[in-house]
Length: 228
Image 1: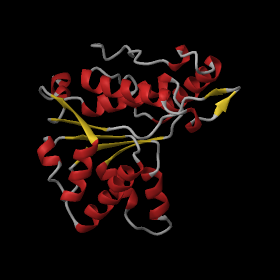
Image 2: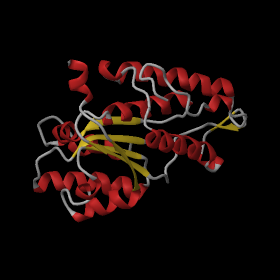
Image 3: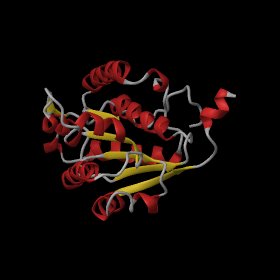
Image 4: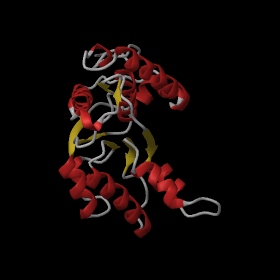
């Protein structure tokens, strides 16, 4: 998978005879509409091109397809494929411009195109904290629950926000909740894995480190190359 303009077929659940093909195709169509509405223009052609990220995505889709059928809503006597928990997280790290966010959006696209049913949130750490800061007319706990309980959370650019007691508390609550509930989570960061585990505090690092596979991206700043 080397092209950034051709979407790779990782796993297509419409080809799995355990599921109703028409139902899965309907879900794929719904997911594509959600993708078109929610993805930033810059990332609309995002695909997974890194082998480590691709392998994690395939495992997540296959894991979801093979969990106990009592976790799925039956459709015409067959289980409906839903994104399942109890799966390891993915930590994507690398220098600025190595394509971490591009790969992360590619994961969301691949999951959408597989035919899985799931809710997802994609947010940078600084935007997340901005949305959760107490302010008039906004219930911070309701807003927090959107990210804490979503089926898939992509937390982009982890480690950028300035440290403070409030930041540590919010991030710990989010990571701890998703860790305890075993909800699939993808985190991108410029920090090396050993620094990720030390950033903020040991409680967060322990949970991320113990729950995550790591995909390291190498190379120069692709944004600067394209600009040139």
